[in-house]
Image (cartoon, rainbow, N blue to C red):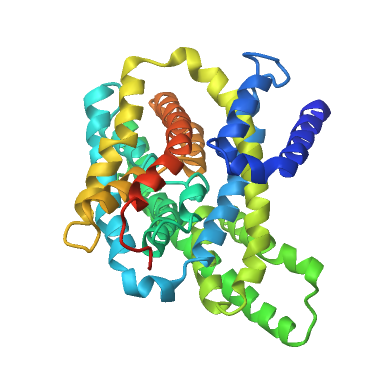
Amino acid sequence: MHLELSILALFAFLYSLIAGRVERGAASGPMFFVFAGILMGPLVLGWFDGNAISSQLRVFADMTLVLILFSDAANVEISVLKSKIAIPARMLLIGLPGVIILGFGLALVLFDMLNIYEAAILGTILAATDAALGKAVVTDEKIPAWIRTGLNAESGLNDGLCVPFLFIFIAMSLEAMTPTGDAIRPLTVVLEEIGIGLIVGLGLTSAGSLLLRQCLARGWVTEVWKQVTVPALALACFSLAQLWHGSGYIAAFTGGLLFGHLLDDTKHNFVLAAEGVGEALAMLTWLLFGSSVVAGVIGLVSWQVIVYALLSLTIVRVVPIFLSLSGTEATVKDRLFLGWFGPRGLASIVFAVIVLDSGLPGGELISLVVVITVFFSLIAHGFTAKPMTNWLVRQKPGNEG
C-alpha cells in the first residue's frame, strides 16, 4: 500500500510542475495519466497489481464525481445562459434522451446477452459526458462564448440528469430476474432514493449556505479554511444521503445547484477549491484506471465491443445532438462541433462500477464496453481538440457570445 501511495503522490507532484506545458500540447492531462497508469500496471512495469477496481478506484472515482457534480452544478451561470438558453436546453432535453435511445437500440442489436433493461443501462451510462475531458475546448477563447457555455452547461448537468434513469433501469432489470416479486417495489425504492437525495442535498445545502453567509458577515471565515467549505459540504451531502439509503449523487448535484444560486455573488471563491481537489483526484483516478482497468480488460475485447464504442462516440452522440439543434442559430459546422465534443469519462466509470456492484448478469459486459469507450474517447477527444477548434473558427466572422 505504501509503495503504491508513494508512487501516486510523487507522480502527482511531478505532473503539477509541468501541467501547463502538457496542457498546451496535443495530449490532455487525463490521457497522460492513463498511459502512465498502463506503463506502471501489470502489463509493463508491474508497480500496480491491477486489483484497484474494487477498492481504491471506487473510492477515488466516487469522491471525484461528487466534487465534480457539486462544483459543475454550482458553476452554472443562469444569467450567461439566458441569451443562448436554447442550445444547452435542446442538447439536454432533446439530444440527451436521443443519445440514450440510440445507444439502447445499438446495444440490443450488438449484444444479444443483454436484456432490454441492461441495454438501456448501457445507453444511459454512455450518454453522460465529462467536462474535465473537454476542458481544452471549453476554455479556449478562440471558440465563440455561446458554444463554450453550451458545452460546459451540458457536460455539467447531463451526468446528474442520467443518475435517476440509471437507478430506475437497474431496479427494473433486477426485478426482471425475479418476476414473481412485487413489480412496484424496485421503482418505489428508486423514487425513495431520489427523494432522499433531493431532501438531503437541498436541505443540507440550504442550512449550510445560510450559516456560511452569517459567518462571512461576521468575518469568521479565514482564507485557509475557505478552501475546505465546498469540498466538505459536497462530501457531506453525498455521505448523508447514502447513509439514509438515498442517492448521494443526486444530493451532490442538487446541492451544487442550490449553492450556486444562494451564493451567486461569492460562489467562485469557494467552488475553486473543490475544483482543484476534484482535478487532483480525477488525475489519480485516471492513473488507476489505466493501471488496473484497461490492463485487466484488454484481452476480453471483441469486435462487437469495439464497434459499439466507436459508434457510441460518433453516430450515437452526434446525430441526436445535431438534430436537436435544428432551427437554432447554430450552423451545420457548429452543430457537428457540439455533437462531436461529448467525451465520456469519470461519470461513466462510476456508473459502471455501480452496475457491477448491483450484481446484474450483464454487468461485466456493460463495464467492459464502458471501459473501452472511455479509453477510445480519451484518445479521440484529446487529439482532436485543437484541430477541431481550428476547423470551427476558420473563416468564422466573429467569436462574440
